[in-house]
Length: 170
Length: 322
Image 1 (cartoon, each protein chain N blue to C red):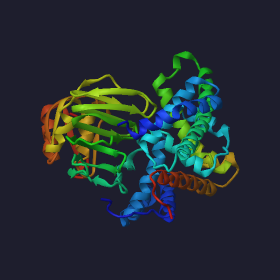
Image 2: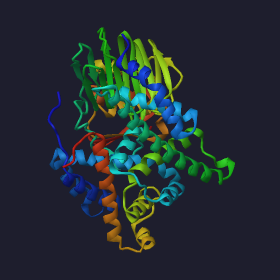
Image 3: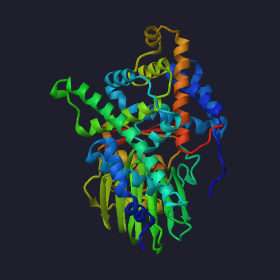
């Protein structure tokens, strides 16, 4: 007897591949995202009432993956361009670059909804290692305000982390 | 098997965030650490909230080596039009990430507060799973179990497990980590899996396992083989190591094991801080060390290697060049 995941794959991969190819305009990425979509379903199986239910569930996952894919592609391009501007001798290894891009994508998604100043303050302190005093000058706010921004950003990220764990935050 | 339906209040996270910012800024001055410690010790929920602050800190850590460039790039992108649900979904897709350390006061916590099965420092546990398989948890380990009509899923959040199964069952047996997903391809099975800070190590003693990393790399691991993997890559297969399962008998069998790995393992069986001088990290260690008597293990190390064990207190021990 084929496993439920196999059945799902056989039934839906043809249209889903077309769907992804239309959105992404390229077959390689479409095949990758098709694989990712089914991997997601394999990890977190859901019971379906009907084939229509299966279709819309898969389409929702696939759409979300496309949005992530675009944001990621943008970031990756920007990062590689900034690397290209530096002398070849100091180029980091491919693995290091891949890890960095991975982290950039995560962090970017995490901070996406913060107000501009909070985001800026947080990135300057956490990533660039700039002191609160200097951040306060650059953003033209008090140092106390910078600390408030920092706590706000940490809280925001921690709430997302807790939601990732399925922990209800009251 | 869940200990309790824990919930984390927004207020606890808020307090934790304020403490985090204060500690980053003021560090050891003005007795801030002591005040923080008493807040931290006050309640399990405070400790759980703190763990999330550490996780946020860890998420940003890999960027610091390229701080200026990375910070500028992210700041220039400006805010996105992602909805809240999309944000959480995006993050779910992403690897849980490379967990580099933040620094000194990261020693506390990682208590796996919300996991179905967990062990603390120095604790091992043997669990009979619902399908008749046996799972052993090493020290400082957290595992979620999800067995239903479609699958048998074990989610290793962090730590070390040994899984033995002779069961014939139609449902796939899956093991998840932050670096990738394992699907058991043949039984009888005996495998050991370790996961920490974005890195996983799999030893297959019996059976066969199919591995999918988070970024989609596939590999088939046979009995007698060991691989290391991250979300990005799988190492070439090497012979399986005894150390992967000897901890079940509270022994650590090192076969040319880097001293850093040995110290990390001992640290999970010993309360307080156990540090290692970076210069010694790659030193190869041979021998068998007791995990239920780490003082003895440290004496054995001193006798065998050019190292000195320096004790500030019983709770703060570092291994340094002799």
